[in-house]
Amino acid sequence: MPSIRVLAKELKISMLTAKRAYDELEAEGFVNSVQGKGNFVAPQNREFLREAYLKKMEALLQEASDLAAMAGVDDEALLRMLSNMLEGRYE
Image (cartoon, rainbow, N blue to C red; front, top):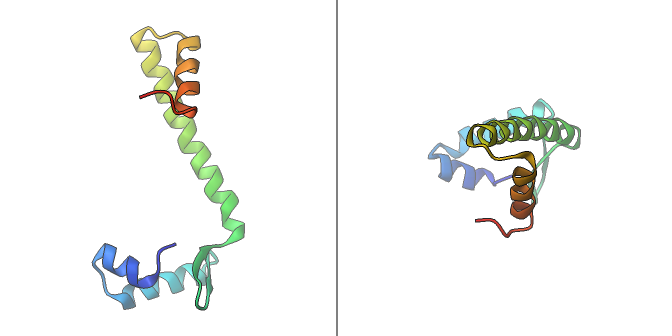
């Protein structure tokens, strides 16, 4: 996570506001603050974040599938496109 100073600068807010936000996130168990090292996502919330990412990926993949169907792209071609993207060959 960005430092309090960097967060405040990027969001154009007071450092006190950024510190307060991090303190609240820590109090609610979302982040761990390590003196001199920074703020980190709390381990118990990594699975929650993973689930949220998976849900978003499913929605995006469904949208891609729907677009492929509208464009007349068959499943094999769609899978090939995805495979090529994952391998860095698709632009």
